[in-house]
Length: 415
Ligand code: HGY
Ligand code: MN
Ligand code: MN
Image 1 (cartoon, rainbow, N blue to C red):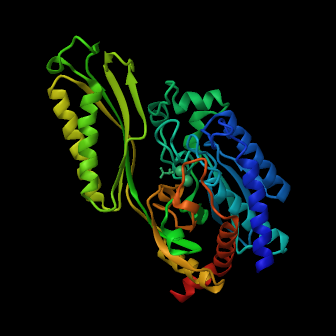
Image 2: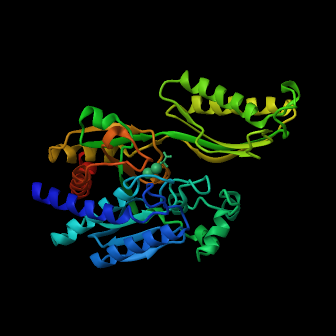
Image 3: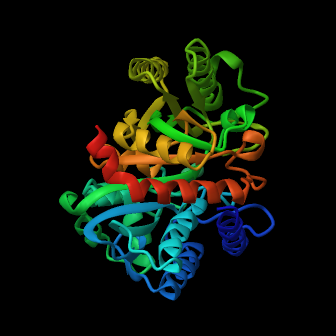
């Protein structure tokens, strides 16, 4: 198995070095936003790789690129992740899972084996939501969750909606509503992903088997006050949008810190007119709050909306625009057990782990049997140019997934 592992690791390393070059910010990490030149180049790269392997290739209305390897059964197991990235992100987040999926198919082809189920190796589009704020474009499309209004609701920082961006990119946005996949033909979804946190590395674990994916709520909050001269306007007659936002953000932080395991982030801030000697008139900032406890999450969001109301009482004009609401997603227990057995069979140390990051699996797993495998993130960090995982760990996840697929129905019989 060692040769196979090294061979797969070497191939993944090569493909990561290829794909990390597909970025809008060379030298400053991976930036591959949806419906841009970088996403088109990435789709072409994956499409060519899939065709060279002899897979049947389709591209769906969301921009998902899917390579199909016929199996003994026409029921399909999708193995995928996202090819989009955050801005100035890393080379492994999302992409590693697609490349591992390609290596799973390549293993069956190389060893002249037919997988028990038809495998769909999928590169999914806009999981992150960094351009338009929403995210999970392909995974939500698979479940038929989009409407035309949604596509016009999400706007990027240049005022371009999903709808318009898709047209500019040469897509027909109305077709997205037809990208829904029939559930019956879908055996399940398996996603390999880097952990993006410090847990596995700190415990020296090779394979993580995800049990649940965190609940997330995201908003863009806009507060409008009054611009004034920074020197002459007395403090008690100002309507300073930034000072108002600070109250809301400070209270959010206080709430989150009191609730173990909860996280809250204000990652994006836009101020107008954004000048050193003008009292800020307007601020728009993002809120991303996450918890495994739905009650805490709802309570924290309620507190934020109450704080916004207090600002309105003081004369500010406010908007709290929801962009993402996802409850906790539990992975398929039968698959979790099966993956544990596979990792044990192959002698890889493994642990069950909950994901603090969102994934396409969090959406698909609501309606389809779904599981995720994690590999350690070196230094426990992600969403940075320095993001790194050992390709040998990715190869271990590939071999674990293959063993799981080969034994998948034995799990059911043993239940
Ligand atoms: O935000 C996340 O957790 C993921 O990277 N989309
Ligand atoms: Mn990410
Ligand atoms: Mn990801």
